Image 1 (cartoon, rainbow, N blue to C red):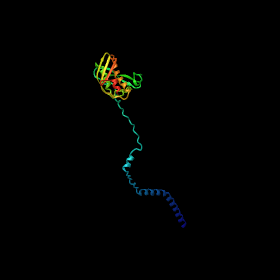
Image 2 (spheres, rainbow, N blue to C red; image 1 turned 90 degrees about the vertical axis):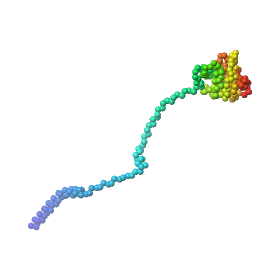
Image 3 (cartoon, rainbow, N blue to C red; image 1 turned 45 degrees about the vertical axis):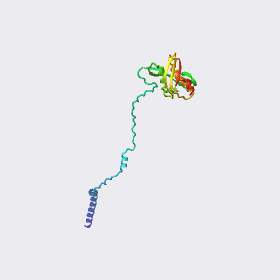
Image 4 (cartoon, helix red, strand yellow; image 1 turned 30 degrees about the horizontal axis):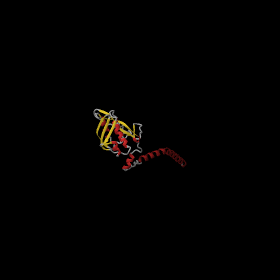
Length: 228
């Protein structure tokens, strides 16, 4: 009888063990689910606020490389063409042309009439108001020049330092008599033939004049020059 009871217990224990191991996985799943449901929900960390100084914030906002913008040059309208300077005065009304005579230094007669010191005397045209006394007008034009150099021509005016004026001009028997007054200033002995040539050739350009006699302050010009 005892043996039978032990056998029954052993069978019961075997059955219990077998049933226990069959339900063990299910129990584990239920336990995990329960633990999952009962565990507290994790709280997310509070946001982190980073304070950046204004200077650094400005630097962060700027691009790391700035591309240079192309420079567009403004288109300028062409400047008005300036008229070339003229050596002839603007004359209103009727005009005429006369010549005044200037000096080409060391030209030795290549460009005009040869005079002392191997220079040449050369005539250049000027426009003046129409007049019945062209010889006197030509002399006035010559004596009013105040520049030594005549533009870019290479010619010079040795009378530029002098202050002379025409007192009278007369023509008789193809001889012109010219009276001048004022102060004559020269720069050397070679200026003597230059002064004579400038005045005399200005008179000799006219067909009615073949000889010239010049007085300065009532003294013959050649004598006045010899006293310089």
